Image 1 (cartoon, rainbow, N blue to C red):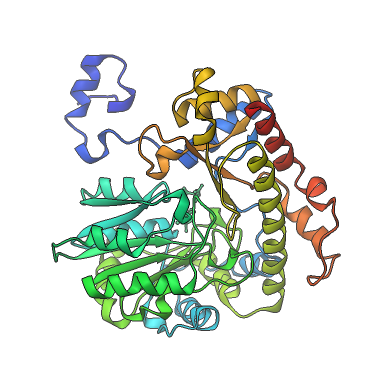
Image 2 (image 1 turned 60 degrees about the horizontal axis):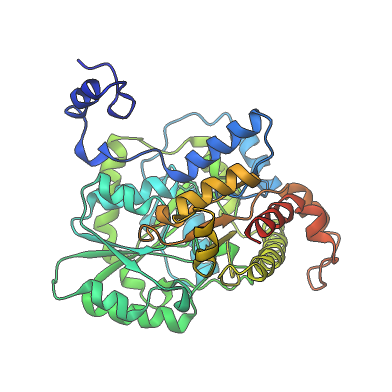
Length: 439
Ligand code: PMP
Ligand code: GLU
C-alpha cells in the first residue's frame, strides 16, 4: 500500500500512485482557507513576527459567564445523548427562534450537531438535488458540495447590489429545470458583513416558492446584527426554510462545536435522514456542551446585555475601519452585522499592478509579508479568479477587556471617542498599516 497521502507525495511517482487510492472529490482540495490562515498566522507569531490576525473569523468575545458556569456544573454528564440532541436543548432552541425570530418551531424539529458546519454537510449529503450558493459566500459551502459530488450553481452577486442575491439571479439559477434545489442563504453575511431588508427577503421568497427551492438560511450571525434587527426569512417562507444557528458566533464559543438546524414540518423527512447519518457517524454532541447550551439559548437578561455590548463595539469598530479603508481608495460597504468586511481593490488595480500584484492571492501574500496583515483572498469565497477582493475579519482584539469597559457606558450613550483606539488597538493599527501600504 502507498505510504504517503497524495498531497504530500515526495515525488511524482509516489503521488501518482497514491492518487489512485483517494476519492477524486477530495483530490484537489486543501485544508479550509480560514483554518490554514489561522495556523500560518500563529506560526509567524511563534517566529517572532507581529501579525494582525484578520484571517480567521472567530468571535473576539468570551463565552458569557453564565454559560461557562453551566458547563462547569454539567462537566460530570457523561452519557451518550439522543442523536437529535438533549430534549431540554431542543426545547430551548425552538423557543429561542420563536422569541427572537417570531417563527413557530417545534422542539421535535430541531437537530443539534457538532457545529452547524457538520449539519450543513449532512444536509447536503442526504439531499438529492442541486445546491445554489452565493459568491461571495462562506468558504466551506463550495468544498462541502464538491466533496459530496453535488452539482453547484454559484450566484455571482455584485458590489453595486451590496453583494446580495437578487430575485433575478435566483430566477436565472432556478432556470427551466424543475429538479430539487437547495439555496444556501447567509446573512448577516460572511464575508461581506451586510444584511437583507425584509422586503428583499420577500422578493426572494416569491421566487423560491414558485420554483419550489428549499432554503438553508445560515443565520449563525443573526444575533450579531449590529442594530439587533435580524429578520429570519423563515417568517415569510416558513414551509421551505431550515434555520441554521449555533454557539460559535453570538455566544463566542466556536471551539465548543455546537450548531443547530430547525426544520419546518414539511421538511422533517430531511432531518430524519440527517439523524440516520449522524447516528452512524458522530452519534451525538458532547453531553456537557449540550447541557451548557441550554443556558445560552434560554431567555436571559445577562446574555441580552452581553449581546448589546458586543454589537455596539463591533458596529463602532467596523464603521471606523471602513472609513479608513474608504479613504485609501478601497471599495466596501458599511457593516451591518457580524465582524467581516469584504474589500474590493478594483480601483487600485493599476497601482497594484505597478507593484506586480495582479491577483488577490498575491495581494494577500504580499500584504502579509510586508505589513503583517493577514487577510483571505476573494477566490476562497467563490469570487472568480483574478477578482481583486479580500475579506478582513476585524476580530484581533481582547473582547473580554472591551466588554468590561463597555459596560461602564450605558447602552443609550455613545462610547467615549477613544474607546476603539484604546480597546481595539491592534485592529486599528493593522488597518493603518494597510492604508499606508496602499498609498
Ligand atoms: N456559516 C458561516 C457563515 C460561518 O461563518 C461559519 C463559521 N463558523 C459556519 C457556518 C460554521 O459554524 P459552526 O460550524 O462553528 O457552527
Ligand atoms: N467561520 C469562520 C470563518 O469564516 C471559520 C470557522 C470555520 O471555518 O469552521 O473564518
